[in-house]
Image 1 (cartoon, rainbow, N blue to C red):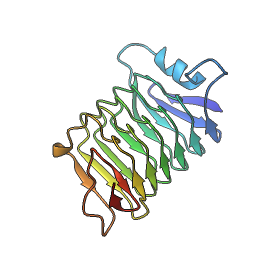
Image 2 (image 1 turned 90 degrees about the horizontal axis):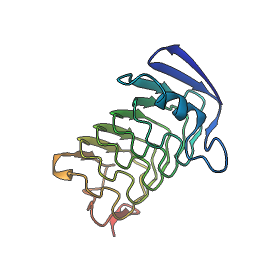
Image 3 (image 1 turned 120 degrees about the vertical axis):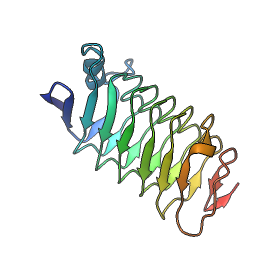
Image 4 (image 1 turned 90 degrees about the vertical axis):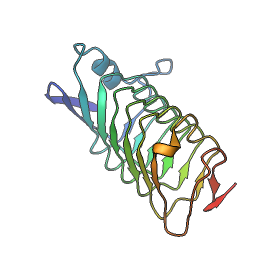
Length: 178
């Protein structure tokens, strides 16, 4: 993985996979560099070639405000957990959203996941600003507590044709509430 800063607040990362920087460190080199930026700096991240966003890849990466990952098919456990300034994520190819991927992203407002098949538990834990979430026609399951502590009464949840609702406390399996 290589990173180039094209502007102070716009980072482009090339390579196909983001994961631990070593066996004991839960943050990538990219996240460490972002967290060392001057206080008040916000970061827009572009990951044009990344196909998998690994476990803890951007865990508690506070300056991160937006992410574009057009080729990412998987967003693994706690990839963006605690990114409290993150407002938007574009991952149109993401098929799997793992446990707590966006947990405690308290500024996240809008997310469109048109290719997602499965959303694991606590994926959107405490995403208290979430107002719009769109799933595509291939959604098969949303685990119990995927929306734990999300004020869903204020969230516009758009589902695939034929799916009337997701009970945010129990989840969805094969298009049917569980």
